[in-house]
Every structure is written in C-alpha cells, then in structure tokens.
Amino acid sequence: MTKWVLRQEAANIELMSQTLKISKTMAQVMVNRGIRTKNTALRFLNPSFADMHDALEMKGMKEALEVVAQSIARCEKIVIYGDYDADGVMSTVILFKTLSRLGADVRYYIPERVEEGYGLNMTAVEGISGSRVDLIITCDNGVAAQDEIAEARKRGMKVVVIDHHEPGFVEDDTGARSDIVPDADAIIDPKQADCAYPFKSLCAGGLAYKFSKALHEYVGRPFQDERGFAEEALALAMIATICDIVDLYGENRVIVQRGLLAINRNKALNTGLGALIEAKGYTQREIDATSIGFIIGPCINASGRLEHARYAVDLFTTDDLDEARELADWLVRLNESRRGLTLSAFESADAQIGASGLPDDDVLVIYDPSIHESVAGIVAGRIKDKYYKPTIVITDSEDCLKGSARSIEGYNIFEELYKCRDLFIRFGGHAMAAGLSINRGNLDALRSRLNDGFSLAGDDLVPKMCYDSQLEIGDITYELAEELARLEPFGKSNRAPLFCSRGQKLQELRVIEAKNTVIMTLAPNGSYRKVKGISFGMVPTLRNMLQGRLSPELASAIMSGDTRRTDLLFDLLYELEIDEYNGNVSVQMRIRDMKLSS
Image (cartoon, rainbow, N blue to C red; front, top):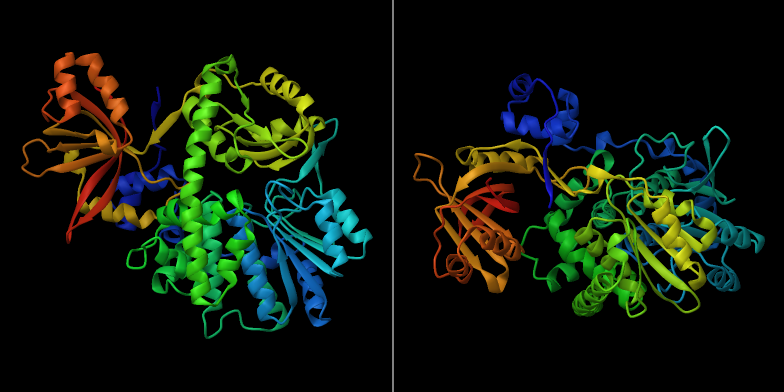
C-alpha cells in the first residue's frame, strides 16, 4: 500500500505570503519545492530568457563552435548522428535545420533500434566514412562511444559530441572519480565532472537549442528570422525536455514554459508539428505539458519503436504540408499499434513474474523473448510501478540480448549496472533508466549480482506519495486552483501540488465501471457549494475497499450504480484543476489515491 507523506518544509509562510501577495497554501507549495527567497520565487513564477546561462560557460562549447563553423565555411560534409527517441529526434531536427540555415552541406543519420541499437556503432562509422563525410556531430549519444569515435577519427573524420548522459568513470583508492570520455574534437556534456556549467539537467534537445543559438552568434547570423526560427527551435527543445522527463526547474522551466507559449501562439511554426497537432485534434485546444508528454510525444516515439525514427525527423524537417499530414497520420496510426503491442508485452512479463520466483527478488530481471525490444522500456516502467522494484526487461536481439531498465527513487540504476559492466557488450543511461546489450550466458550472473548487492531496505521499498498540505473541503476554491496554475508547467522536480483531506463524508459516490471512473461529490460543512472529485483507473481500488467494509449487497449496489449513497468516510489525496465544460468553469479534485478513514 502506498504511504502518504506530508512534505512540509519549515519556513516563515506568513511572511512569504505577505511579501509575494500569495495565499499561504501557495507559499507552502513553493517552499516545498525549495523556493525560499523572494528573488527565487519571482524567477520561478516568471521564467525569463534572462535567467539562462551563457552557453560558452559549458565545457567544450567554444571548441565545438570553432569546429562546426570551420566545417560550414569549408563546405565540408557534415552528418548529424542522432537517436530514435523524442529527445534524439528533436535534437537532430534542431541541429539539422540550424546547419541548413547556415549553408552547411548536412544530412542526418538515425540508427535503427533493433539492428543497430543505441548510439554510435562501428558499422555506421564505416558507412559514414565511405560517404566521404568530414564531420560527425552526435546528439543524445556519444559520450560513451570511445572505440567508435577513435575509429571515426582514425578514418580522418572530426567528431563533436553533444550529449547529456552520464560519462563512464573510474575511482581511485580514495573513492575520487575521474570521467572516461572519448577522444573527440569537442565534447559538450554538462554532466562531465569538470564542466563548470551551473545547470546540469538539460536534455539533448535543450543542449541543441543552446548550441544553435550560440552558433548563430558565433558566425554573426541572427537567431531569429521572419519565419520565427528561434521560436521553432525553442518549441522543439520544449518537446524534447518534456518527453525526456528531465527536471523542470532552472533553464528547463524556461524552455518548457516559453516553448509552450510559442507553440500556442502559432501551432504551425513547424509544419510537421502543426500537422501532428492537427492529426490529434488539438488545433483548437491549448497545448500543455500533459498533452505534449502523453499525446504528441508517444507518436514521435512510435516511429523509432516500430519502424524507423527517420520518419519522425522527416516530419519535423519538411516544409511540404501535404507530406507532413501524411507522415503525421501515419505516426498516429503507428502509435495505436504500439499501444496494443505494449499491453500484450506487459501482460506477458507480469505473468512470468507470477509463475516464477521473481517476486522475491529485490531487482526484477525479466527475460521474455516474446517482447519486442522497442517496448521493453515501457514495460519495465509499468512493472516497476506495479511492484515498486528496479526492473530490467530483457529480450532477444539479432546476436545477443537487449534490455531496458527503470528504477525507483534511491536506487541509481546506472551506477549499479556500471559495477557489472564486465558482463555487458554495451550499456548506458542515467540514475532512473538505462539500456544494455548482454550475452545470454551472462544473464543469470547479472540477476545474481544486482540482487546480492542490493542495499535498500525497509521504508525505501515502500512507494510514497508526498503531499504539500492538508486542506479542508471549504479551502478548495477556483481562486486557489487558478493561483496554483502559476506553478505550471508541471513535471519532474516540479510535480503538480498534491493535497490531502481526511475523514470526508460524500454526498454522492458514482461509479462508471465501463470507463474505470469514480466521481465523488463533496460539500463543505455548512455550505451549499459542492466540489466534485474525479478519479480515473481506481475502480478496482474502490471495489476492494468497499468489499472489506460493506455487505456484499451494498458494495455491489454502489459498484453497479444502483445506489450513490454511503456513510463511509474517505481520506483523499488529490490535485486541484480547473474544469471547463459547456462554457462553465469550476474547480475540481483530480483524485490520485483514496483510503477509507480508520
């Protein structure tokens, strides 16, 4: 069962409320996110490009600008080597469009997920070299490609790396770490230990955006043009930032907030993006972080998962509206296929857990050859959520096994896999997610070593939901929901505020089992005003709770909709949102968890 934890950081809430002219609830939410000073609060509430750091502070940026600018000036052949997820696609598009605008002889290369796997590979290096390419720019990969980059340079090609993944490292006798990075002409990766750049959490799309702006300045060309290229690049970086689930504070908050403003002002600022928005029926709707993360992003990722990510790059680089619409419609259909494939893969993996001794493991290492490797990461995430254990889903590939890992808070999956690096053909990732290739004979050793070295215990293994404050139902107002909306966009490290109300008697409880939806109606004490609460996906949870407290007949009547009355008291965990329906606006509770009051 999920543990509810009150996250109430100490501060002078009264003073903060008065100084910023915000409610005490809003002040507490901000303090819980580490926002404690007036200046920090104002920057958070009003993200500005003025808060972005100078790209030249980044290690390798100056060298990279020199190498790329020289290649453009000399009319050398340039290949952008990207990746097949949304971050890799968006960073590839930003760099390709940037270099094209600056007159470069440029093309892009996206590896095929199944045949080539993640990152730079020797076969690709050989093929690119055969095309007489002078410069390779990797984006969203490269920091771990020591051998491949050495081969590329041996063949006379220059290499610039733009990556945001953790470099490999070695430790000396004192535990001090030194990065292991390839011998490239320039490496841009803020996660390098000796990179002084203040913000370490940019994704590849964010890095590509900053590089694009810096390159325009370096060659003396305006970043903005009559078509709004600066806003287009920003919107593409915004998509990458949301889809790669990086921390939404600092520069990432500026990129996402300003990128959303740009795309809502002009949904056609990128022809392909406009076509995809149209295909999903969002042309007349506001685009927010949720619609990017759960509507637009999965369609982009579907291309690399089931076909080839170059089609997604084609979509975002074309200026032909008919071609864009055709590609967008195809990506939408492909994503529907991906959903069905993911569901069957999850059910297969879950069944294997139930039929084996895996539930006793602390780290779930699941080998299932029936799972398509393109959805292994999604399945690992869903298994991790169900069992709240670090999970690796491994399946067959052409000449080895490939796997995707997803982790829980407190367990750095990259570092734990790094301890087992002698078992892998290759691997890479970060604290919460990783990918790997491994020989079949090493699978049992991997499972044993990860579980033998597992150090989390007790409370670390209980899923937690941290809420910001406890509210009375009478505290829930439209004005409060509107005020909290100033904290958007929400995402990693800036979750939507979560509140708790305990011992609530419901005026009405409505169950729509066919839609897995629960609707509650509550009223503040002594008030005729009603507040609606809605929950999606919690019908099974409610059924189990009612069966434990009510007679079978009454529980069945509530679940079937024959009655909407109950005297049970509920504890509710929820977000506040503004509901717009038929021209009416009101505040409602989006219920994230519920329990019966003890």
